[in-house]
Image (cartoon, rainbow, N blue to C red; front, side, top):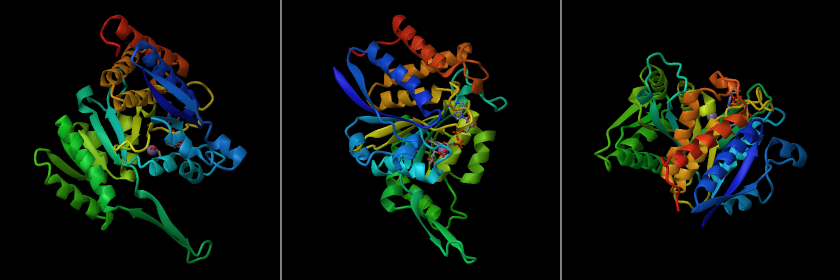
Length: 365
Ligand code: NAD
Ligand code: IPM
Ligand code: MN
């Protein structure tokens, strides 16, 4: 039997609440499949850990994580610890040091999910965002000159390397080709006269190797408008780190909210573990009440199953989520219901078990 080793970092706020539901689904998948199982190791890192130890993770934390096949993370950041300390000490550190340069964020309107756009149909909102995840505006580079003086100047440098830009754009072309979909690049070359001019140039250069892939290129401001007015324009989308961050929260908003938006931070060459997480944060405004929506965290379990090579099970988890959304009797308050986080997780497990019982889904033997 194949054993997958998962490092679980529940993190802060609603992180632990949604992660336990994701793990519940993962364990159910493992019980339904004789061929594989998951071994979870928990790491109590985050803002509470910081309060006790003055650091966001153990000194040998990265080595401990490296020994796993994947990382499953809840959320990082909580009032009391400055965000740039908590995020650079854990989430952004892992993305960078494990070279998880691809951030896959599907924006799909699942059956039963509420959509704020008038007349939008399920097929209209089906995008795959591929966000550069290792450099760009998140290079962590800059300077703070004449601090506190009248001539104070602060620089935040975007770093777009040839290697970093080419590899994410190539990954996007390969994905669009394999899915037979349009590829859209979102940038901002009119104002960002170094970084985004370079980005556009690389997008065009690499595109010469993919004459069969139909492409579009939008400025980020226009792209935000089109995502609302004509979401059907977008299929596979490649964009920089910061633009991808912002546009995927917008994407979440048009496909049911942050409680339904998942993300995979991939190291495609598999030298380091990849990390799966909902794209939302620790939601301090609702933390501790047991009412957070766990579906985004459960969707990222589906992404993990896909990454491990179980696409049928990845799809099945999405079908189970859709069933729960469509039945509408077990939804958390963000989706208009009154259910608790744990009840939603139980319903997803029940839906998944139902698929197997009705022989709509075959266990991997
Ligand atoms: P947030 O995503 O935590 O919350 C934004 C809003 O969405 C809140 O009203 C919240 O209640 C709601 N929301 C988010 N997830 C939800 C869920 N699963 N169910 C129901 N409602 C949900 O963003 P924020 O408030 O800007 O950030 C809070 C903290 O989280 C900050 O410290 C921030 O830096 C951090 N953060 C971390 C991550 C991450 O770990 N990946 C992502 C975003 C923000
Ligand atoms: C996300 C988050 C992070 C990001 C923050 C918390 C650093 O917003 O995963 O979308 O900007 O990437
Ligand atoms: Mn974000």
